[in-house]
Image 1 (cartoon, each protein chain N blue to C red):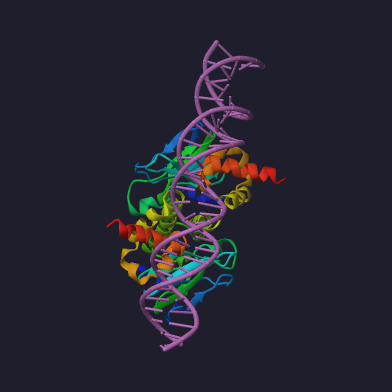
Image 2: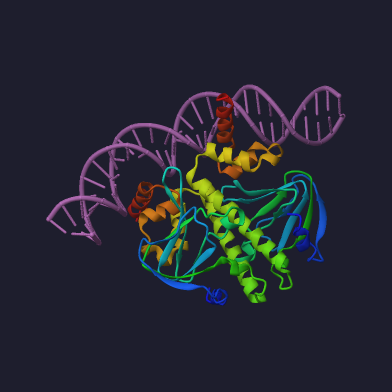
Length: 179
Length: 179
DNA sequence: CGAGCGCTTGATTGAGTTCAAAAATCGTGG
DNA sequence: CCACGATTTTTGAACTCAATCAAGCGCTCG
């Protein structure tokens, strides 16, 4: 992820901001073409459904980019909220620089990989949601997010896994018992 | 999707093939960087889990590209099977031409949009799987796949929705009753 | 220090699965 | 083109996993 700085420098308007815990940097319904590079801290992106329930798409810690990469393709307003789980330091830059014509071959490749990696993550998630139990999903989460595990509240992990906080608590109880 | 032909022409090795129903064009575990443009017919991509269950990722009819766009990014072998639901006519070409340096600005933009659109579809699917009932998922499917609906066997729709064929049959029964 | 939020635990309910078998549809060979 | 076997779809009963509802505990931060 280090060489993403190449891309970041393409946006002369890119700005680093210091954000407090719980600070919202993007709301569903807004028109924005911004993306966010996390220098420090921990963010999440999510939707809120008709019943007011939050559904988390991704967590982004140091070195990750978080944004609504796609909704702009179809319809203008984003459907994603993005906010800070911790106090964070984030570079705001324009997503459009991913599509500039004067990119080098390496930058191009980097961009394609970035999008492809995002697709890979989502594809895995779809399989996960379709085919494995909540318990197995939690185990997979433990593996894939081991570094930032203790920085994420339980309730948010439950939302990411697509279960209620109560269900996750019981799953953890089961795991603890079986040891 | 018409101008995708621009990209297709970049691969001098691209070949059109006629395929019979049930013919498999890609198997999990294979090493390939091919992508498939559907000129005619209907294909599906899917995984098979430990229990031997098929989980469908996408259907591709006329004008769509189907491929494992992402697993190559990480690990060599693909995890997706791709086969024909109907007799089909398909252009086999190399995915790598999406990342060539000599693409025009329009082609670049087209590629980015293609990937972004795929992300959008997957993102919607994740929300769908996390937050709505099987019945609602079926209704959403009816809307988004209305043109190819009657060409897809029930059992495959159930797999796409993440439910058993029995469950889908009952859902359809309910809907029919309520009219 | 107290109020509220987050986590746990238990009882109940419900959506969807599994298993089984019948009914409908498809497709292939004669 | 028909008939028969195979595959799909439907229907039903029993069961399971996770959701919902409700109550209690523990922390933190205001």
